[in-house]
Length: 559
Image (tube, rainbow, N blue to C red):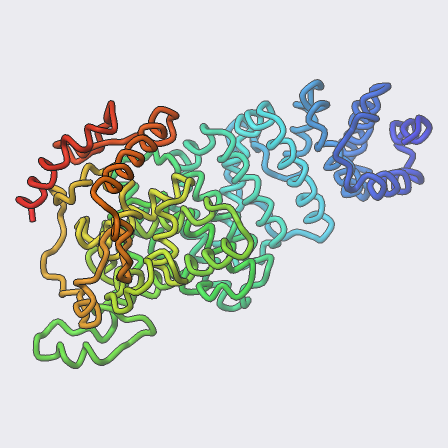
C-alpha cells in the first residue's frame, strides 16, 4: 500500500475505500511475514486509519472489508507487542457484541443478547471474532483485557440464549464464539476458573453438547455442525483439566457429561468421515479428564436384562442391542476399541505420532480398573483365550500383537500405557501376563513393579471367579511353551553338542569376557533380582555365577 492510498483511507474517502481495501486484502490474504510493514511505521498508520473507519457508524457498509484488513494485520505479533492497542480491542469487542454492557446505573445490563441478525450484521460479528481470536492468541495483554471486559460472561449469555430461543443463531458465529472460548480458557488459567466456578460453565456446556447431538440427528451431521461440536469439546477439555469445584459437585457433573459423551460416541462411532473421527478424538481426550468412577456411564443396562434366575437363560440368548455383554450395552467401549484399531492401522501405514494413541489407551486403562464388566469385555476383545501359540505374541495384527510390540518401544508414554492395560486385563497376575505377552516383552513392567521373580502383587483387588482361559489347543502345546518368548519354540540343535569339556570351558570364558567388556563400555548392566523383586546392579560379571545356585533354589521353593 502506497502513501497516497493510506492518506485516502485516513481522509475516509468513501469512493476509494472499497477498492483500496479489496486490493490490499486480495494481495495479502496469505501474508505471514510483515517486515515491509515495519518501515516508515506503515503497520501502525494503516491500523489507525482502519479503526478510524470502524469507529464511524456512517461507514458501516465498509466495516466487513475493514475487519478483513484488521484480521491480516493481527497476524503480526511484533507490531502487536510494540504498540498500545487497548482502545482498538475495545472497538472489536463492541463490534463482536461481547463487551461488558453497562446501563445508566453503572451495573451490568441483564437484557438478552440480540439473536435475530441480518446477514451484514452477522458478517461484521464473525469478522470481529476472527480478529479477536488472533489477538487473544498473540497477546497476553489482550487476553487479560477480554476478561476485564467480561467477554466470557457475554459469550456464555449469548450461547445460552441461543439454545433456549427458537430463533436460529448463525452457525458461523457459534463456531467462532466457541473458538474464542477455547483460546481464552487454554491460554489464561483465570479464565478456566471463572468459566467453571463463577459461570457454572461445565453444566451449560454439557447441556449445549446434548442439544448439539439432538440437532445432529436432524441435520445429518453437517461439517459446520461437527466443527462446532469439536470446538465445544476442546473448551470442555481445558475447563476439566484442573477442576476447581468440590469433588462431590464435580462428580455429579461428570456423570451427566459421561452419559452425553456416550451418546456422542454412539452417534459418530462409525468414523465414516474425517470430521466424525475428529469429534470422537476430542471426546476421547475429554474422557481422559473424567474420574474413573464416572466411566461406568459409558455402559447402560440392556432393556431386556432380567434379574430373576428363571429368566437368565432367556436373557443370555436374547440381545436387545448390537453389542450386549453381561446384560450391559457396551457399544461405547466397542467404539473406543474400533478407534484404537483404526489408529493402529494409521500409525503403521503413515508412521504417525505414537502420542495420538495415548488418550484412548488412557481411557481404556481407567475403564478396566473402574469396573469388572468393562474389564471382562476388554479382556475378551484384547486378550481372548489363546489357541495358536506358534508365533511370538508381538507378531500379528490383532490388538494383543500391537500392544505387545509397544512394550519394547522407546516411546515411554505409549509403552507404559500398553503395559498397564495388559497387566490390568491379566488382573495383575504375573503368570497370566507372561502367557499372553512373554516374559521378555513384559520384563520392563515387571522390573518397574518389583515382580521380576514372578511373585504375586500384594493388595491387587480383583474378583476370583473368572473362568479358566486355557483352551484345549493351548493345553496340548503347554509343555513346549517358552515363557520368555511367549510362544512354542521349535526344538533346536544343542550348540555344545560334540564339544569336549575343555572346549566348553573355553567358550564359557570367552562369553564371560565379552559380557564383561560390554559392562565396562556401559552397553549392558548385569544385575540380580533382589529381595524386593527389582534388579540390583552387579560390580562384576562373575557375581552371576556365585549367586545363581541360591537363586535357583529359591525359585524351586516358590514353584
